[in-house]
Image (tube, rainbow, N blue to C red):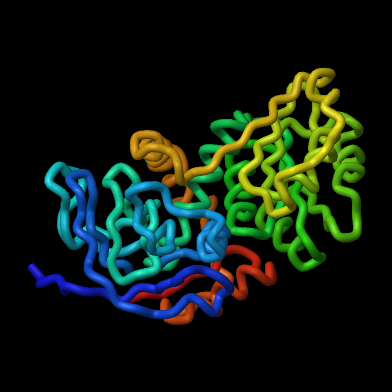
Length: 334
């Protein structure tokens, strides 16, 4: 067995601020708890919550690593006392509770999955955050079913790319929004039935046109306040609005009557505060229902650009520019 180092490189965000606060540093290697594995990280994904944590608006929950990073892929190098699913040397991807901008990270066994067959570290690391989020919200809270129509905002984001593919794979009609013609074209290539440029068109009017006035059954929204009234307008009777972020703010005034008249459900969630057991249930559902789709090539991440771990600041600048289509990744090791 290879001797583990006492220390590791990680990306420190200090007291928070702009991307420039992200700098390489060293710290002690984490020790896995009884239900955790220690992963030697090969790749990690960059996500919007990482930016929020860097800025100081998304603090880690009690007991979680203060290091940024919510997903990774790599090799299991140590096992907690109660771990039974893995052995040293197994390659896994994990939804972490923090700590993934580093050479090593711990993750609960229940929140890990094996790499899909044929996947490398970068593509495996691009899965957990978006696939856990989309499964829990679009198919859990949103109850999207075959034959229904869904509106996915931000279709060219990591979440959007995942949501488009899974919604189509499970038999839904997909309408999406994106910020320019190139991004709209990418959404159509991924399988969306229609893509609306929200900078040049009112998405609510376009949804009305595309659905012959009926509206959509489910909306997956990460914009929040700026879209709230138009989202209600865009839903069909018994429609469900699922809010997963507030990129357009979280305070608004709106006419709430459509909720009653159309029997709408307005819901939302965040992933980080869920318990290990709750996240484990999502992982089990993904293994049973989604991993076979990945291995069959019917869905999968789209990687836009990869940076070395030490260049995390550049990766965050790209994330903040919204110029990307798909995932931004950090490569840690071979």
